[in-house]
Image (tube, rainbow, N blue to C red; front, top):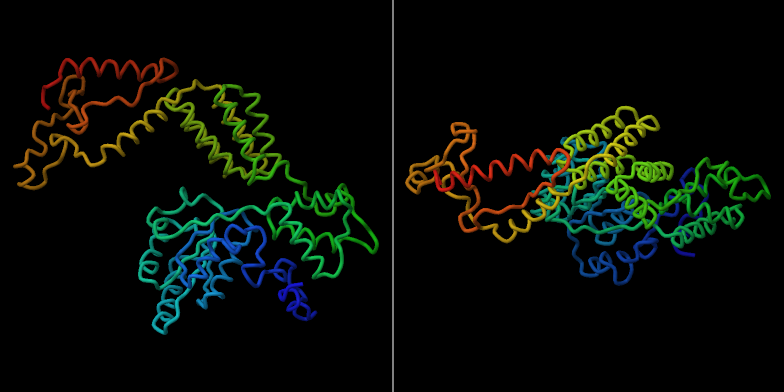
Length: 439
């Protein structure tokens, strides 16, 4: 048994403390399920061995040890530890934390600032970390359950290393429960099937697993052993149909997306219902429906994006379970809408062109000339204001001269894009007729 458990032996110290708190690791080596970070060759172990920490973002599901690891890093590097939550903190709180960190730094001690739910801070609040990160006032460790690429500012991400925490495997959860049994000095009163169900109920969350274990011990009478049915009745929680962080999650969202793309509303509703039934985060489903609207329908039906966003707003307003019907309505609309990935393909092509020709200047006739020098350099000369031209169309070329005209967007002849195709063909004829006039 480790020193962690030995130190928790006195009854007075343990009284009233949740099991998850009593089992909190005292060293990185005791952290379960994150060996790719905390093992001998792990990224965090190597940082500690080097004697130097940089700012980091911990990305992963709840109950995987992000807060615990941050505390351990501070302890093992003799940094002062400050913790705030973006849910409960504002600008005034950040200023106080930064001032305290600056004072410590003048006394020769650096601060590790742990920010839980860092994605909840807005752009301006995230930017406020940049100066204190750059001058070494704080080493920032932010924790988030959301994809940092989407939720955090690029400037913040460029100054921090993203480390991914994984949902705990059933083997890791089992290891935690065995530690708990050692500390409690008694086995969980569960038969084999119930024990396996408890592992699934934890759903990769170590804290949840230990909380469930406590519930079982509280509920069991002397000599009582729970089976799987009784376990569900006692803890009032069902085992997830799939692990939201593993293959089942990705398999079902893939099936939902492809059913919508394949214009099969019945299959799409089935997979949507399965994901709701499994306890999937509704906001995740809402984001995926919006993605389907822009990727697979696009301008073939411009209302698809409007309806997908409206479904998300309706869910926010109604909550569960009433709001789930809004997602179902959006799902059917998307599945029955005309399909087009023309904008999706056009944007990918434009992105490639931007990377290849990113240094080219726009043609001078479409640049403003706020100074005399720029006017002398022919900035803005020859520009034709489209609203003053016949058909409100000048036909000028707007691409960099070295690139020449490009075509990225090629709408199909279906849905609303049939009309867009006609407009583009009409403008192409006019452009050809007026080519060279005013460029």
